[in-house]
Image (tube, rainbow, N blue to C red; front, top):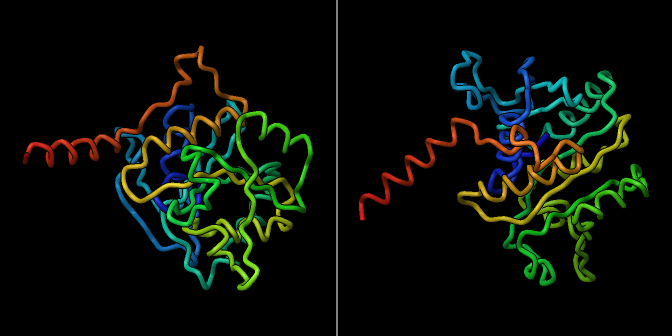
Length: 239
């Protein structure tokens, strides 16, 4: 599942994964913490099912439950939302939660500037597993080191700038029976489709379902992305 974060990289990544894998929409999640959203189906052009703030999909072939979050979580209810989400996931016997997110590139530390496309991961201390950490590092991800400041204490917004409710998911991971892993990269606002492809490819590799030799598993863009290309083309014709 993604968090609503800067550049919408998490949402773009999950859109790609859902459009690529044989996924079926099984429902939506409604919660008072989530800003309501309703629109045309963003993934299946012929589908009459609407797109809402939180849509739930299942991929039986790979035993995946995919939760697409498209709307912000109100800050004052964020903790309650995460608690309810973890309670529901635990009741469904979810063994592992993979969170897709992004951080504000303006807040990068010097060492992160040299690797603009680097993917980072964070596993809560209570959920640390040496084998899992080794698997993440083997795929090329770098463990995220939280910045520190000797003069002023840093809050979650300073540690994970622009990441939405990612800190809440990490800080409350003990309430989920399964493991929690977050993967993210730095970006800016704008057209972040390349970053979406990058994070989606990494997620599929991490889940063991990416195979470059199988054409049907190459990432496919959802039909709704064509609207952005049309807008870009119309603006270019002005010049």
